[in-house]
Length: 98
Image (cartoon, rainbow, N blue to C red):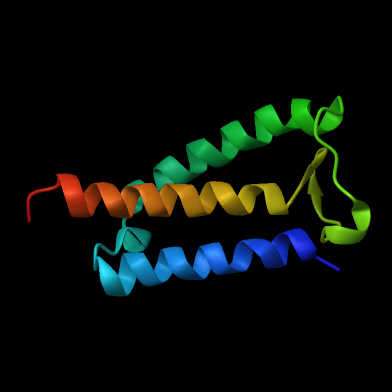
């Protein structure tokens, strides 16, 4: 049913609207964003292996897409992407001199 993925879609859309149209920081187009995102996705993959593999955190299989990286459902990476873009955009807007 992909319920967890669908719950994340509004976060992605709001983050992109904020980055591209409201704050106009466009960090989604910057190479540094993808470097940071790669590191954060790697860390997410490593630490979520323990959380979902032990299992400290469990998911109802009826609510996930069914795609995994190791023990980690693909949906877990969605929020990492959102956070990297959102924090990058807010940082660019509030702390960088334009």
